[in-house]
Length: 205
Image (cartoon, rainbow, N blue to C red; front, side):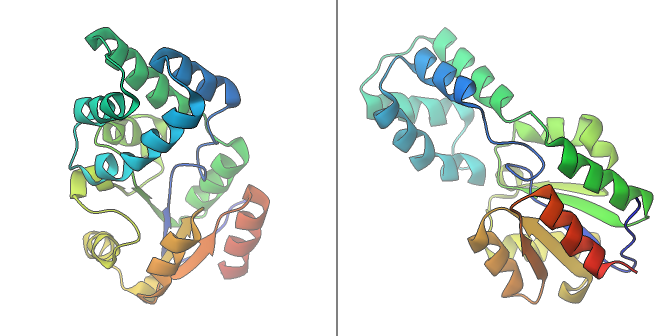
């Protein structure tokens, strides 16, 4: 069933909103390639992630930073395997959320994507089939700033030519939604596709 919200742009986060959380098998495979202990690996993985998403680290620098923190010595081939396993783990789409996107598109609602992600995701977002749904795609690693900074939301609105009152933001992280709301943007913290659909239908014409 189409969802029409005329005069507004719905801006979607990607990770754990459109995509599903990486599976236990994905996570186990990544730790296995790293060759370390999961209790050490994941804190290092996330500690360096913000810099990767902000574009201040290259992919090589990101993984080499984790390598140093773990006291490992990885061959170049291991870095390639880690990147591929990590990238692939974020590609599985939530089919129910996808249907919400398709219903918004069918209703003529303007859509954009805003993701805290490294530059490597830009091509996938734009040139995979998801790119057909979005008017514009914004990737933090390309912009040099991350959510929930006011700067990134202001950039998105300027590029889309909309005001805060014309913008609706969807993200699974409350702090990102609060950052948007501080600028006067309507925001919804994603918990499920069902709740998302109910929220958007409440705004529909």
